[in-house]
Amino acid sequence: MAHSTVLTDTSLPGEGERDGGKQRETPRETPKETAREKGREKGSDFSELSRRISEAGLLRRRPLYYTVRFGAVALALAGGVAAFLVLGDSWYQLFVAAALALVFGQLGLAAHDLAHRQVFSRRRPSEIGGLLVANVLLGMSYGWWMNKHTRHHANPNHEKKDPDVAPDILVWSRRQAKEAKGPARFIGKHQAALFFPLLTLEGLNLSLSSFRALRRPSMKRPVLEGTLLVAHFVVYFGGLFLVLSPGRALAFVAVHQGLFGIYLGSVFAPNHKGMPMIEEGTELDFLRRQVLTSRNVDGGVLVDAFMGGLNYQIEHHLFPSMPTPALGRAQIITERYCAELGIPYCRTGLLASHREALRHLRRVGEPLRRAG
Image (cartoon, rainbow, N blue to C red; front, side):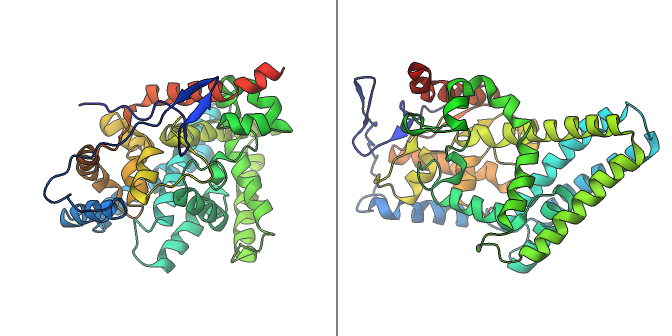
C-alpha cells in the first residue's frame, strides 16, 4: 500500500513561510485533467468527490453495526461495574480501573459518532444519546464539546479559529511559540517530552472545562447538562468511596482517569498534530482545507477498533456524518481522487504518526528554548 508525502512544512501560508532564514515553498498542485475534470473549477472539486461517494452508497445509515458496537460497549461497561462490586476493597481494583479506562475511551468515540449524526439521522435522538453517553456516563458536557468540535471541523489546524490548536498549554506553531505567555511559554519549551504525561490529565480537564462552560451563553441547556454532570460524579465518587478505602479510591481515580486521558490523546493526536497549520488569510477550498490538514492512520482491524474509525480522518472530515464502517471504502475513492487532482494525501502507521506529532511539538517549541 503506497504512502503519500504531505507538505514538507508545518504551516500553510499563502506564499510559503520563511523559517530560520530559508524559504519553504508550498508544493504546487499539478492536476491531471481528464475529459471530466476539464473546465471544472477548484470550488467544485468536492462536489465531484461527493457525487462519487454518494453513488457508492457510503452515506447510508448502518443501524445493525451501531447496535452491535454500542451493545458490546454497554456489556463491557456492565462487566466492569460488576467486577468492581465483586472485588470490593482490593488493590486488584486497579486492573478494573485500567479496563474501564478503555471502556470510557470507547464511550467517548460513541459520543463522537452520535454528535455527528452517524447513528441517527434526526437531531433529537442524536442529542438524547449524546447527553446520556457524554454527560451521564463520561462526565463531559455534550453541548460544550459539540460546539468546540464543530468549530474544529470548520477550520482544522487554523491558528486562530481551531480551538484544538489554541495555545492554552501547548503551542502548535512557531508563531504561537513567539507569542506564548503563562503556562504555554513555560511548558512549550519541553512540550514534546511532557505531551504524554500531560495527557493523563485530559479526562479531568474535559470534565472541568464542561463545568466552566455551563455559564457561557452558547450553552443551550445549562441546567439539564449541569444536573446530569453532577449526577455522574455523585455516582462515580460515591461508589468509589463507598466500596474502597480512601487510599485505594484515589489510586483507582488516578489509574482510571490517567489511562482514559492517554487513550483519548492517542486517538485524537495522530489525526492533525504535525500536519500543516493554516495561517490567517490563507485561502483554501473545502476539499483542500480538510485533506491537507488531516492524516490517516493505517493498521487494519485493530487500529480501526482502537480509534473508532477516526484513523480515516481525511474521509471523516470530508463527510462527518458517514457511518464508521463505510470510511474504509471511502478512503480508496478519496485517495484516488486526490491523486487525479495532485492534492497531497497523507497516510502513515500509528507509531509513525505519533513520532511526527512529537517531532512537530519539539520543532515549534524551539523559539522558547532559544529564549531561555
